[in-house]
Image (cartoon, rainbow, N blue to C red; front, top):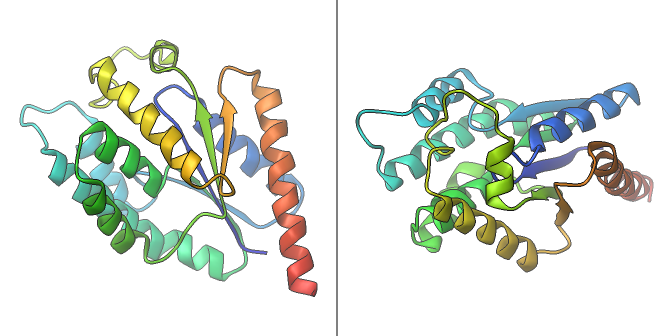
Length: 212
Protein backbone atom coordinates (compact mmCIF):
# COMPACT_ATOMS: atom_id res chain seq x y z
CA UNK A 1 0.00 0.00 0.00
CA UNK A 2 3.06 2.28 0.06
CA UNK A 3 2.37 5.69 -1.43
CA UNK A 4 4.61 8.76 -1.43
CA UNK A 5 2.81 12.12 -1.37
CA UNK A 6 4.55 15.51 -1.24
CA UNK A 7 3.17 18.99 -0.64
CA UNK A 8 4.71 22.02 -2.36
CA UNK A 9 4.12 25.75 -2.68
CA UNK A 10 5.39 29.19 -1.87
CA UNK A 11 5.33 30.98 1.47
CA UNK A 12 1.92 31.10 3.16
CA UNK A 13 0.19 28.69 0.76
CA UNK A 14 -1.18 26.47 3.55
CA UNK A 15 0.57 23.26 2.54
CA UNK A 16 1.57 22.31 6.11
CA UNK A 17 -2.07 22.59 7.22
CA UNK A 18 -3.22 20.40 4.33
CA UNK A 19 -0.44 17.85 4.88
CA UNK A 20 -1.51 17.48 8.53
CA UNK A 21 -5.19 17.25 7.52
CA UNK A 22 -4.45 14.42 5.09
CA UNK A 23 -2.31 12.61 7.67
CA UNK A 24 -5.13 12.89 10.20
CA UNK A 25 -7.76 11.57 7.78
CA UNK A 26 -5.66 8.61 6.68
CA UNK A 27 -4.91 7.79 10.33
CA UNK A 28 -8.62 7.82 11.18
CA UNK A 29 -9.19 5.38 8.30
CA UNK A 30 -6.68 2.99 9.88
CA UNK A 31 -4.16 3.43 7.04
CA UNK A 32 -0.51 3.33 8.23
CA UNK A 33 0.84 6.81 7.50
CA UNK A 34 4.00 8.79 8.25
CA UNK A 35 4.06 12.60 8.22
CA UNK A 36 7.42 14.33 7.85
CA UNK A 37 8.80 17.62 6.56
CA UNK A 38 11.75 19.38 4.97
CA UNK A 39 14.13 20.72 5.95
CA UNK A 40 14.09 18.63 9.12
CA UNK A 41 12.52 15.35 10.15
CA UNK A 42 15.81 13.94 11.52
CA UNK A 43 18.30 15.08 14.15
CA UNK A 44 20.70 16.27 11.44
CA UNK A 45 17.87 17.80 9.41
CA UNK A 46 16.49 19.77 12.37
CA UNK A 47 19.95 21.16 13.10
CA UNK A 48 20.45 22.21 9.47
CA UNK A 49 16.91 23.67 9.35
CA UNK A 50 17.87 26.19 12.02
CA UNK A 51 20.98 27.16 10.04
CA UNK A 52 19.03 27.53 6.79
CA UNK A 53 16.00 29.38 8.12
CA UNK A 54 17.34 31.98 10.49
CA UNK A 55 18.72 35.31 9.34
CA UNK A 56 22.48 35.34 9.52
CA UNK A 57 25.34 37.78 9.75
CA UNK A 58 27.23 35.73 7.15
CA UNK A 59 25.34 35.08 3.94
CA UNK A 60 24.89 31.44 2.88
CA UNK A 61 25.88 31.15 -0.79
CA UNK A 62 23.26 29.66 -3.16
CA UNK A 63 25.52 26.66 -3.77
CA UNK A 64 26.03 26.02 -0.05
CA UNK A 65 22.27 26.36 0.46
CA UNK A 66 21.63 23.78 -2.28
CA UNK A 67 24.03 21.30 -0.68
CA UNK A 68 22.67 21.83 2.84
CA UNK A 69 19.13 21.09 1.66
CA UNK A 70 20.46 18.02 -0.16
CA UNK A 71 22.13 16.80 3.04
CA UNK A 72 18.84 17.21 4.94
CA UNK A 73 16.97 15.31 2.22
CA UNK A 74 19.45 12.46 1.96
CA UNK A 75 19.26 11.86 5.72
CA UNK A 76 15.45 12.04 5.69
CA UNK A 77 15.22 9.53 2.82
CA UNK A 78 17.59 7.12 4.59
CA UNK A 79 16.07 7.43 8.07
CA UNK A 80 12.36 8.04 7.47
CA UNK A 81 11.02 7.98 3.90
CA UNK A 82 12.55 4.81 2.49
CA UNK A 83 12.02 2.64 5.62
CA UNK A 84 8.38 3.81 5.88
CA UNK A 85 7.68 3.05 2.20
CA UNK A 86 9.34 -0.35 2.53
CA UNK A 87 7.01 -1.07 5.46
CA UNK A 88 3.99 -0.34 3.28
CA UNK A 89 3.12 3.06 4.74
CA UNK A 90 1.74 6.14 3.06
CA UNK A 91 4.43 8.81 3.45
CA UNK A 92 3.41 12.48 3.42
CA UNK A 93 6.29 14.94 3.14
CA UNK A 94 5.86 18.70 3.56
CA UNK A 95 8.33 19.80 0.83
CA UNK A 96 10.70 17.54 -1.10
CA UNK A 97 13.04 17.77 -4.11
CA UNK A 98 10.73 20.04 -6.13
CA UNK A 99 11.22 22.74 -3.47
CA UNK A 100 14.92 22.74 -4.28
CA UNK A 101 14.25 23.06 -8.01
CA UNK A 102 11.83 25.93 -7.40
CA UNK A 103 13.76 27.81 -4.72
CA UNK A 104 17.42 27.15 -5.50
CA UNK A 105 16.98 26.58 -9.25
CA UNK A 106 14.38 29.11 -10.36
CA UNK A 107 14.63 31.39 -7.31
CA UNK A 108 18.39 31.55 -6.77
CA UNK A 109 19.28 30.96 -10.41
CA UNK A 110 21.47 27.88 -9.97
CA UNK A 111 21.85 25.92 -13.20
CA UNK A 112 18.92 23.48 -13.38
CA UNK A 113 21.12 20.59 -14.51
CA UNK A 114 23.20 21.03 -11.33
CA UNK A 115 20.04 21.12 -9.19
CA UNK A 116 18.68 17.99 -10.92
CA UNK A 117 21.93 16.08 -10.38
CA UNK A 118 22.06 17.13 -6.71
CA UNK A 119 18.42 16.12 -6.19
CA UNK A 120 19.05 12.76 -7.84
CA UNK A 121 21.83 12.02 -5.38
CA UNK A 122 19.81 13.17 -2.35
CA UNK A 123 16.53 11.41 -3.17
CA UNK A 124 18.25 8.06 -3.86
CA UNK A 125 15.69 7.28 -6.56
CA UNK A 126 12.62 7.99 -4.42
CA UNK A 127 10.02 9.93 -6.42
CA UNK A 128 6.58 11.04 -5.25
CA UNK A 129 3.49 9.27 -6.59
CA UNK A 130 1.60 12.54 -6.10
CA UNK A 131 2.75 16.12 -5.58
CA UNK A 132 0.17 18.63 -4.39
CA UNK A 133 0.97 22.21 -5.37
CA UNK A 134 -0.98 24.84 -3.46
CA UNK A 135 -0.64 27.74 -5.87
CA UNK A 136 -0.95 31.31 -4.64
CA UNK A 137 0.21 34.75 -5.79
CA UNK A 138 3.48 35.59 -4.06
CA UNK A 139 2.23 38.80 -2.41
CA UNK A 140 -0.94 37.08 -1.16
CA UNK A 141 0.99 34.19 0.35
CA UNK A 142 3.47 36.46 2.09
CA UNK A 143 0.68 38.61 3.52
CA UNK A 144 -0.78 35.49 5.16
CA UNK A 145 2.38 34.95 7.20
CA UNK A 146 1.57 36.78 10.43
CA UNK A 147 4.99 36.39 12.00
CA UNK A 148 6.93 38.94 14.01
CA UNK A 149 10.32 37.92 12.66
CA UNK A 150 10.67 36.73 9.07
CA UNK A 151 13.06 33.89 8.21
CA UNK A 152 15.67 34.09 5.44
CA UNK A 153 13.25 33.06 2.70
CA UNK A 154 10.31 35.19 3.81
CA UNK A 155 12.67 38.19 3.83
CA UNK A 156 13.61 37.83 0.16
CA UNK A 157 12.56 40.39 -2.45
CA UNK A 158 9.17 39.82 -4.08
CA UNK A 159 10.91 39.03 -7.41
CA UNK A 160 12.45 35.94 -5.78
CA UNK A 161 9.02 34.69 -4.73
CA UNK A 162 7.59 35.35 -8.20
CA UNK A 163 10.42 33.26 -9.69
CA UNK A 164 9.74 30.43 -7.23
CA UNK A 165 6.04 30.38 -8.14
CA UNK A 166 6.84 30.40 -11.87
CA UNK A 167 9.24 27.52 -11.29
CA UNK A 168 6.59 25.45 -9.55
CA UNK A 169 4.07 26.05 -12.33
CA UNK A 170 6.64 25.02 -14.96
CA UNK A 171 7.41 21.80 -13.06
CA UNK A 172 3.70 20.99 -12.76
CA UNK A 173 3.16 21.60 -16.47
CA UNK A 174 6.01 19.22 -17.33
CA UNK A 175 4.54 16.33 -15.30
CA UNK A 176 0.75 16.82 -15.14
CA UNK A 177 0.08 13.21 -14.08
CA UNK A 178 2.17 13.55 -10.92
CA UNK A 179 1.11 17.07 -9.95
CA UNK A 180 -2.22 18.21 -8.54
CA UNK A 181 -2.37 22.02 -8.76
CA UNK A 182 -4.92 23.65 -6.46
CA UNK A 183 -5.84 27.31 -5.99
CA UNK A 184 -4.62 27.95 -2.43
CA UNK A 185 -7.19 30.74 -1.93
CA UNK A 186 -10.06 28.22 -1.97
CA UNK A 187 -11.65 27.38 1.40
CA UNK A 188 -9.54 24.93 3.43
CA UNK A 189 -12.29 22.29 3.52
CA UNK A 190 -12.66 22.43 -0.26
CA UNK A 191 -8.90 22.01 -0.76
CA UNK A 192 -8.92 19.02 1.62
CA UNK A 193 -11.75 17.39 -0.37
CA UNK A 194 -9.92 17.82 -3.70
CA UNK A 195 -6.77 16.25 -2.21
CA UNK A 196 -8.73 13.42 -0.58
CA UNK A 197 -10.47 12.56 -3.87
CA UNK A 198 -7.12 12.20 -5.66
CA UNK A 199 -5.51 10.23 -2.82
CA UNK A 200 -8.41 7.75 -2.62
CA UNK A 201 -8.11 7.18 -6.38
CA UNK A 202 -4.41 6.39 -5.97
CA UNK A 203 -5.05 4.06 -3.02
CA UNK A 204 -7.72 2.19 -4.98
CA UNK A 205 -5.39 1.83 -7.96
CA UNK A 206 -2.63 0.49 -5.67
CA UNK A 207 -5.08 -1.97 -4.12
CA UNK A 208 -6.17 -3.25 -7.51
CA UNK A 209 -2.59 -3.67 -8.74
CA UNK A 210 -1.64 -5.52 -5.53
CA UNK A 211 -4.55 -7.96 -5.98
CA UNK A 212 -4.19 -8.22 -9.75
